[in-house]
Length: 183
Image 1 (tube, helix red, strand yellow):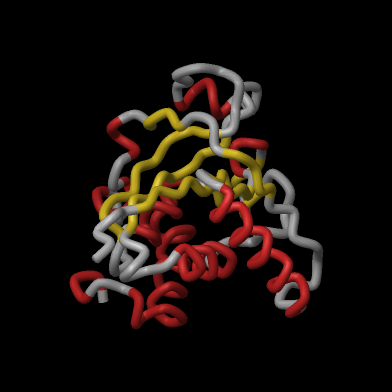
Image 2 (image 1 turned 135 degrees about the vertical axis):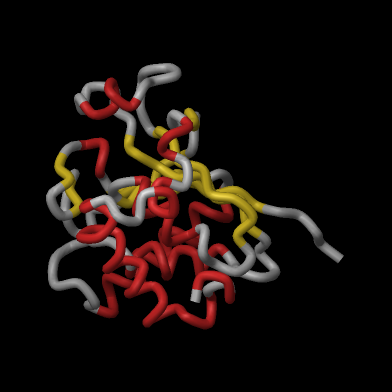
């Protein structure tokens, strides 16, 4: 029996939103916010916000592929943000908010490329998908106050206006994949 957990690193806008979505899924063991895809080692949030580090706000997900396969994670990834907007998600603008899949191995790369191609073929989005699929190199953990941001700050305006609709969309479209404690 394979008890091996896998790791993936995704960027799909603000990591507060991404963490709130993916931590609710069955089979996900942990979701950590951080920075990936850039040139600066150990960047701070303030540095990443300048857009000059090359890093994207990202999440690193540890998951059990027997419970939630990588393909399902990608399906949720594609449908809980807009992968057609370059360096932007809603009012969050800059390269740090770009859409990216940082694959950890050849298998993840192939699955990501196939899922992107299928989504484009489906025509779900009217515009072209601009999500980059690139090899994983480094992941730097975000400052502690970013961890569990949504759950710890649900009364904050950003949580109410930006994250709440994404969580509701997750529950509506992917309710069977959500842990009971979050339903």
